[in-house]
Image (tube, rainbow, N blue to C red):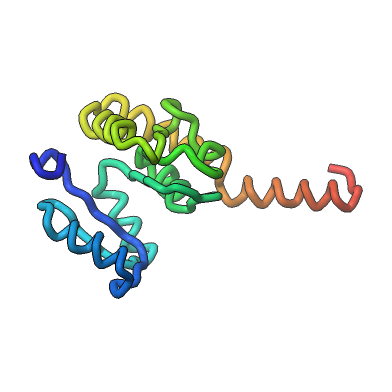
Amino acid sequence: MLRSGDCTLTLAGQYNPNHPYVHEVLAFAESIPGVEMLGFIDREKLATLFQRSTLLVLPTYEDNCPMVVLEAMAAGLPVAASRVGGVPDLISHDLNGLMFDPHDPADIISCIQKLVRDPITRTRLATQARITADNRFHPRIIASEHLQIYREVLGLPR
């Protein structure tokens, strides 16, 4: 999709450019048109990036609670992410995002293509993602749930 110009890819996050793996990824990224490597970005730049993006893809092999998924959902950005670790606790496949097997390139490609090429699905998932983020992961909801846990541990009434 990148080589045909159907989309662009922006990678953000802290990395060590001297690490052999990162060096290989950077060299690979430079060889493909439409790839932008941003490195570490602050929250303001992340919010701007979300506003101009079509989707977020998180191809990870392990992650407990990736904040970038919650942030993207809260911003109303559709998410395609690996079906690993705690990610399935955040995303319900085809309800508020798409999930894929990170070891299956065809599965990853299928999810990305669906979100890039199907604006109805993209809008539906983005809308549900925002609702999920607000109803389940808003800071006041999380704080309330933590208080409930503390009450239970202390044997206090609700």
